[in-house]
Image (cartoon, rainbow, N blue to C red; front, side):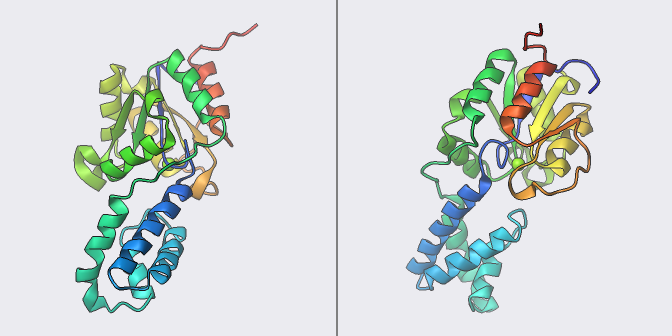
Length: 237
Ligand SMILES: [Mg+2]
């Protein structure tokens, strides 16, 4: 590891602080209920959507593809899809359990340095997720990139991380990013000259280290301990 000591820490949300699969399962169930209310086979829509999400949660159009998979004609999608998209985006998961040790690690980080969360996605959904994890009080600054300019400024676009730096009052190059996705979290750090640690967990756990973070660890507490070390918050002796 090299470079000046970081002055602030930026954490990703999905698959970094909690398993996103838990949220997707909850939201897919809500869509299934809405599909049933719309006169469709709700259980079949639910199952098809789970399958589409499992194939890749990042792609748009998952609800469209799930409906086509259960036999809804393409000509009916324009009418059927909007209420189901609404059911997905308005869904508030009741509770999302953080990965083990995350709460204590965030407590240590927020006591040691300025701390922020930078996440991509629908701002209402991301806010609901933060609330459902119970981690909100430990994340004094949350920036949702989409609120700055839509999907176009999602990571690795630097806009979100630059906004975080502004909110924290720190030079972007003195931030340390902790996240699960090389192509987003590590890449956005590289885009502004910041340092990064990859946590190998969640949907992208097997993704190649491209670009490569300064350190790759298996759990958030490991990343946090390394971060505390880098910012000089740990006592050596
Ligand atoms: Mg993530």
